[in-house]
Image 1 (cartoon, rainbow, N blue to C red):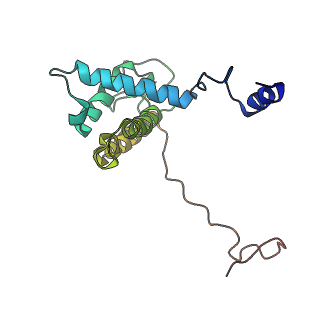
Image 2: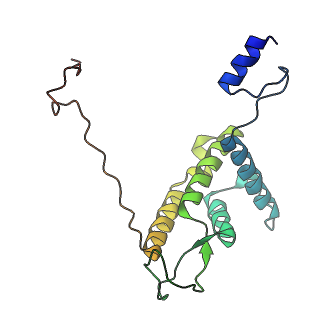
Image 3: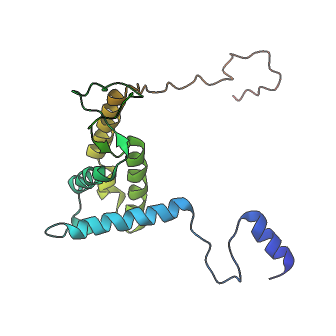
Amino acid sequence: MSSSDRGKDIAEGSSRVAGDTPPTPSRYESQKRRDWNTFGQYLKNQRPPVPLSQCNCNHVLDFLRYLDQFGKTKVHLQGCMFYGQPEPPAPCTCPLRQAWGSLDALIGRLRAAYEENGGSPETNPFASGAIRVYLREVRECQAKARGIPYKKKKKKPSQGKGSDESSSTTIQFS
């Protein structure tokens, strides 16, 4: 490899050393592989073990609930005096759960991994409507418990539809 090729590799962020080693996977790809392996292990540990070909959205929902025990996000229960407070002044006994954003990202990675590992998009249990409903309920529950309103962001009206007539660089297509 010439010095100009090495310089090009460095500039492009390539991790190739001698041309035979594959590039280091991105953080996302590494996390996706870890998540996929964890889910596969979860299915194997079920009694009886569940083959991936028989996995459905109920297995995915059980997996998400199982992960809650490792969560770090305090979710106040309705009877808690800190329910609805974003920054409670004292500790309480409410449970720790997986944060909605973490679960949402996890499902996105597992959905992609399922199809990359030979699964059909039509049978992808991670793309099920039941999963979307569960994630929406988790988001709303956590928002209420922590006093943080989640509001759907409205799409901004696109510019260039006659709203900015003083611009000389606007190009109209017809």
